[in-house]
Length: 204
Image 1 (tube, helix red, strand yellow):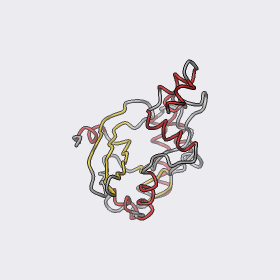
Image 2 (cartoon, helix red, strand yellow; image 1 turned 90 degrees about the horizontal axis):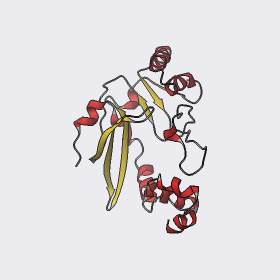
Image 3 (tube, one colour; image 1 turned 135 degrees about the horizontal axis):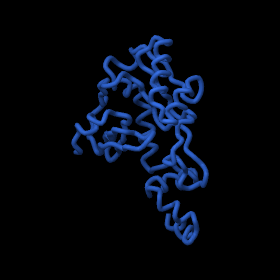
Image 4 (tube, helix red, strand yellow; image 1 turned 180 degrees about the horizontal axis):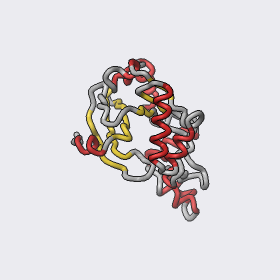
């Protein structure tokens, strides 16, 4: 990190580096030299691999028991994403409702690392590579009816709660911490929640 900052001093890169959280920058540097993003990443990945399906119970009944469809927001259902990118909520909702009615489903799932056109605001511009933009979805979306309760499927504590009131951002969100081994914790980010639910929680 110190070497990178020295090399960047007095260059346009110096300004861009200051816009990146140090933890994220360190993870990028570690990945660039073939290391895990964090010294604990291997332990977390191993725990996830050993505990498949634990997160499916965040809905009641279990998410696997809902009539569901994969929402292909980078492909077959890209028109929904395009309307969202324009912040045309009425059109996005109409198209979504039509998709759900056609499929006869109650739950739509947005997949991990799907290429999406919705990331159109400056929030998704790369701080490191000029002109580059994040355009892949880093998470899973559960499109359920408004006010559907969510359940955290394992013991944990709320470490952050709030509202990011920016276009195409998380809106109401929680961050929870889960101890999976001695001195090893997993953090989960729950986004796109109602504002009321984000205000309900106290930070432990």
